[in-house]
Amino acid sequence: MKALNKILKYLNIYFIFFFFAFGIVSWGTALFAEMIFDRDYILSFIPTITFFSFFYLFIFIIAEIHKTQKNNKIKKLS
Image (cartoon, rainbow, N blue to C red; front, side, top):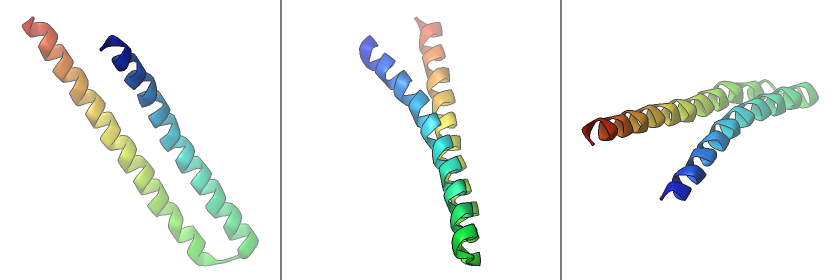
């Protein structure tokens, strides 16, 4: 069980990195496509991409806080 917890801890770090990288790459791609193709609708994807990347990150942070509080309650009871 301890090994599984360590693996999940490292996956959580990679999850955060993935969402930040996803946001940065998406912004860069949309701006690059706007410069090349000169279409205004491409820039309309940027707020959507940003919203979803931060939305998933926000849910992930709340889940981590909840898990930490739950573990602290279990430690206090034992």
